[in-house]
Length: 264
Image 1: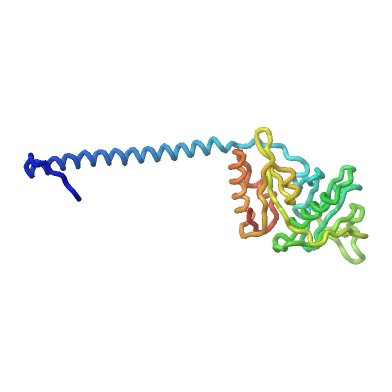
Image 2 (image 1 turned 180 degrees about the vertical axis):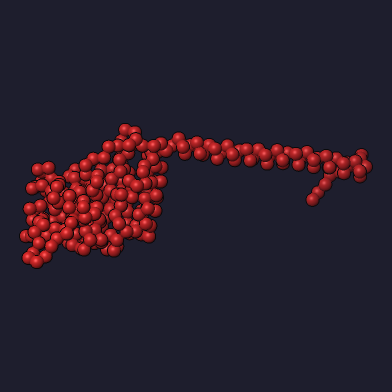
């Protein structure tokens, strides 16, 4: 350390000068420390305020009839519904499958009954394949992390509660008779998306291509190690950061297949 001294002062006077300078420096440091603490409080308060302002609560929307099922709209706009459990599987076929609709089922134990609603129109091969992907994703194939699974389609008239002689069929189970159309090695390509609305945004999930076509922002979901709950929390943060509107975690989780996953 280099110290300058005044030759016109005694040693005591030089020491006193440095002592006074040191006292002033300590006072300045104390003031800077206090200022830093106040600044940190203001920054944290500002962040909290910004977060509170950025994410606002979405208005509650009245649920549509098909939202009690798994559902999505194909790239062409055809509604597809699938059962969530035995009771809703029963309702998909018995109450909601009409003459010109198309029935789908993954060729694996533990798969929902899926119906593409045609509304009297003829769906293209693209819509049929998207419905097949949907049937595959919500089957046991996802939980088993199978890259692909065979799916077949039939007309609702081929789906029956009539069991072979000596056998019985429980709630949510059906027999399919006659010729089927097969979608071999159907890939489990899935996504969750959101479409901006007036003061909120609507969430959708389903085959990757259909979600791409029907959303303003989407996240592809693949096999991973996250539970449905943890994946839902992560998606909630991403959608809220994108749109600035809060959304129910339960709603997001209800859109996901059973099993573990991760988002890309």
